[in-house]
Length: 232
Image 1: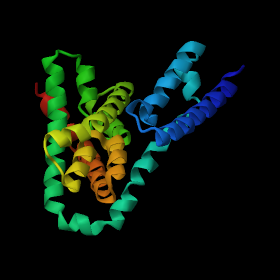
Image 2: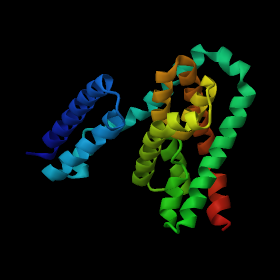
Image 3: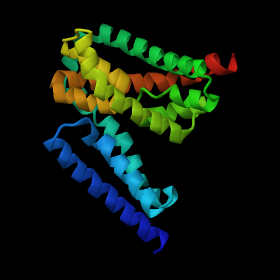
């Protein structure tokens, strides 16, 4: 079997597993059945057992990665349709985005340094709280490794989505906007998906915060890199 045919089969397997997983999740809402969790696990197990290399797998599946950009921008549609909410709360949203971005970057890097992790991991962890397209763009300026960045982003999203509701309950946070902002700032796309399950307002706020946090991180990445590593 040549590499092209193998890549096509891998692409078809990815789509089949994803849509099957999605049907399972709609029927039984369990954390382990989330497509973001189960689909990668099944695919990794498939590649390991069949001894298929990453290069062969990704050959004809690269367009799926490319779709991350348009998929992220699609969140702007409901934001545009709910501009009244943004105009009403623009000050608190702006303050929240700036605070969340700085806390996410600084806490990640400082914790990695406390654990004496390699600098490559520190740079990759710095952008873990924003969605993948923005994270990869920011990591390029920071010197992070794309594979590690993608892994940390997925782990952060799944973890934030899993513990978000419990954390809001423990902190007695009941306002929908606050929940949406928390999901968008801490767990990007996965959290935004969960926010839309809670309600349209939560989803809109989460979408906005996710996009603004990503843009802000990309803009300040060179400054962060200079302060935390060049000047160290």
